[in-house]
Structure formats: C-alpha cells, structure tokens
Image (cartoon, rainbow, N blue to C red; front, side, top):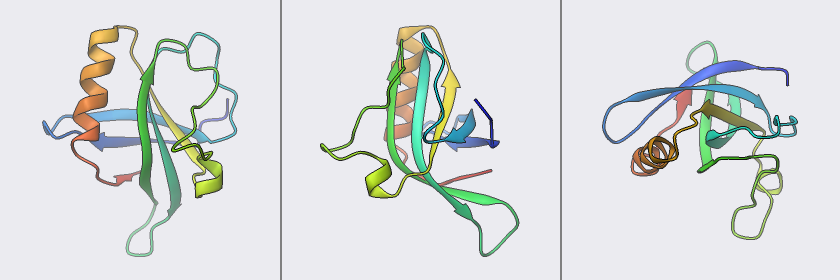
Length: 109
C-alpha cells in the first residue's frame, strides 16, 4: 500500500487519533485489525495541505474489503481515501470508533 499522508481525527472526548491515509482502492493487508475512516480528501483552499470530509467510520478485526454505505459504494458517493488506525484490541477499537462517530469533524493532513 502506498501511504499518501497521516491525518489526525478528533473524537468527542478530545483525543486525537493518528490515521495513515491511503487511496480508497488500496489493497488492505489481510488480517488488518483497526479503525477506519473513509473520506473525501481534497486540497485546502484556505491553507496548505489537504482536508478530509468523513463519509464513514468503522472498525474490524479483519478488513480485507471495505463495506458499503447505505447499499452504495463509498466510491460512488465520492470518497477517495481510506484512513487506517491499527488497533488489535477489540474493546479499544469499539471505544475509538464510537468516540469518532460522536464527533464528526474534518481532519487535516
């Protein structure tokens, strides 16, 4: 997988989680356990770098294929990146996922 960048997403708790950013079509290593955020990444007009509009958040203990959202692929909805935060502990993944879902903000790369 060719990493594009690193981005931090803040949860409702105020904790900032670091995610590695990859193209949406990147092959995810079999057995990857962690939290993912699907985004639309685009160049920022107001400052240098990129911004991410979060389109989906989830977690998995084996993420070989990206789930769809509302029966429609994320790509069809305009997503172009998947951001991955490795975490093998299931309880920790669930906690991070819920923290992020409760605070839907854009991230900066």
